[in-house]
Length: 421
Image (cartoon, rainbow, N blue to C red; front, side, top):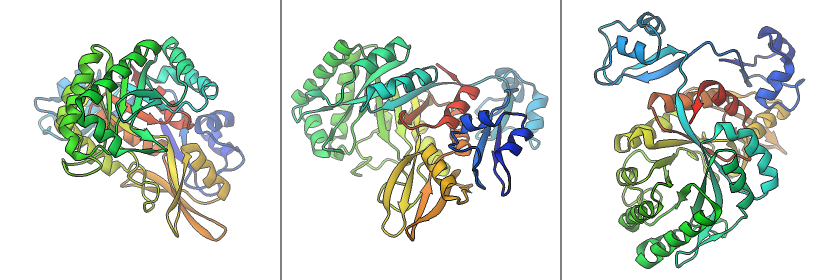
């Protein structure tokens, strides 16, 4: 795989000739709106034939170079060549290696969809179905007595997802009036009757719509309801049986039992109950806050190290944003836009895209009506580094918010470097 970062004065025609590709191929893979307009700092994904890749690996107790060579279908000599400072007797626990191999890692992926327009989304689902294990359909909330109800019509999307072999999950949120309702979550979780109502009504919808399970996104749960949330998960998983229980949790790097955002998430208990735990490693930079990377790499590493110290890594998914944020600097007014929207906005503004090496995130600034804006988003470089986290920690996989947002670099990289279970 090659990433070409555009330099001043380069044209897409020159770059295409350099890699012996057509201009149209580069345009399609990278979601460019105008082949005649590129800017310095723009990262282009150059899809070459995959002759192997360097996969990151963290040395574990008992590992030897010979065992690693066998596991990855390579040779000791190739590993040493890729890691010049490593000798046969120089491995240590926690050491990071790059393993040259033709073997692709296997992961499970989940895409979220808020089905405002099923007809618009169905072609997207058909195009991405081979890249998805699960589809979480964001269509449900619940009443103050715990009865689940439909917010957006999901019937056609669930039917098509199942036809395509993508496991559909009913996503339920404590979402009312365009925001998460902490009081609603707390009151329902605190009441055994209301918890039972929620479980029974979820099972009825799952049966009627032929869902393959549930994806929970209950946010801002009052910390006092931590144990009741665990009880609810236990009861729900018992009722689901072999159907999937997928639980989304806010990211954290330590246990903060009284914190109003993350306090109710007992990672260890949730990890023991749920089939899949999706850690929301997104919105480090958030709307209304100061301009910051949406999912900086250093923070993702800290979150993953903490999560996998309490949860089996083969149950853990981490979240990848298919979006960026545009901050107006004077007051931090924030607008969201797809990664392609952010990229092409930079090209339209004829600015220069910078890359923060520590965060592994691209960003740029531009001016509109004398107002300075700063945009943080994702590109092929940031996605590649995030996928390395997944492979390095042998995580179950990735979630994507959300599938209506085009991100061709991400999907092309995923197809070329992973096997989707």
